[in-house]
Image (tube, rainbow, N blue to C red):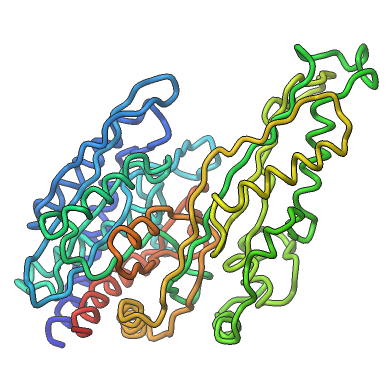
Length: 479
C-alpha cells in the first residue's frame, strides 16, 4: 500500500504541471476531419510519441497509408503502438485512446479560444477542445507513468498502448492495424495482453463515476429519390408531377413514431427482453429523467419511468432522422421542387443486431412502402456505414479491479452503464485479442464533448488520474 499512497500524493503535488502538459496538447489543432489540419494531427501524434518515449515507453509509429478526403490524397496520421514492461509474472494491460479532436471555431459559440486551455479556477473547469475527448484521458495515463518513474516505483503491471489520430473521422486503417498486430502473437506489441482499458466516454451524470460494459452499433442509411431531370419551378409544375421531396417525407415518416418505436418490422422484435438481473442494474443507477432533460436542454423525455429511459438509451435500438440532402435550407424563400433528395437516418444497434442482419429488413420495408405510393419517381436505399454493437462481462476481474479503484478514490460504487453511442474499435480489440475490454470514463455527462465550450473538471482530471493508477494496482492484485 505504500506505493499506492506515494503515487496518490505525487498526483496531488504535481497537478499544476499535469494541467500545463494538457495545455500544450490542446494548443495542437489536431482536427482529423479537416484536410487543412492534417499536418497538425500528425504533429500531435509526434508530440505524444515524444512524451511516451521520454517516460521510457518503447514505441512504434505505424504508417497507415493514405486516403482521399475533400478532394485531396492525404497521409493518414500514424497509429502509436507502445510497450512498457516485460515481466512475465505481471498482468499486461492494453490502453487505447485517440489524439485527434472535433472541429472548433470561436465563432461556433465558444466563449474562449477553443485551442487555448482556460483554467477556470472558480468553476473548477479546464476548458478547451479535446480536454475530455480524448486528450485529457490520454494524458491521465502519462501522468500515471510519470509518477512512478519520478518516484522510482515499479509499475504494478506491464502496459501496452494503441493511440490513433482518426477516431473522429472513421478510424481509417486502425482495424487492419490492430488485427495485423494481433496476428504477430508474442512477437507483436499486443503479445500477452490480458485485458483492454479504454477511457473515451463519460459518466451518466455529474455525480457518480461509471463503468461501461456495452456500446450500441450503428447502421447509417440514405433514402434517395429522383424524378425530374432538373429542379423545377413550383408555380409551373406543382401538382402536375410526382415530387421527390413529397415521396421522401412520406417514407421518412414511416420509419419511427414520435415515441421512438421503430416501425420497420423485425427490428425491435430481434432484441430479447431484459433479465431481472439486468433490470436491477438500471434501477440501481444514480439517474433520473431530470438528468435526461438537463442534458437535453428541455423537458422532452419520452417517459417518466427511469428504467424505461435508461433501457431506451442503453439496451434498445433507436432510429433517428438526421437530415435531407438536396433540399432548400438557407434563409429566405425559394419556390423550388428539388429534382433529387436524400433522406439520412441511422439505427443504433444492440445485440444480436448487426448491420448485416438489419440491412435486408430496411431495404425490404422501404421498397414495400415506396410501392404503396404509386409514384413515378425512383427510389434507392443506400447503406453508408456501420458498426457492430459490443457487450462485455461485468463480472470479469477487469471490471472488478476498476470498481475497487473507483471505490478507493471516489468512495462511491460506480454505475454500470451501456453507452448509446459507438466506438467500433472496442469490438475489434475484443475479437482480435479474445480478452475482456473495459470502458473506464474520466469525464462527466456535462463535459460537452463535440460541442462548444468543451471542458473537463479539474477534479475529474486529477482524481481520474488517481483512478487510472489505482486500477492498475487492482489489476495486479487479481493475479
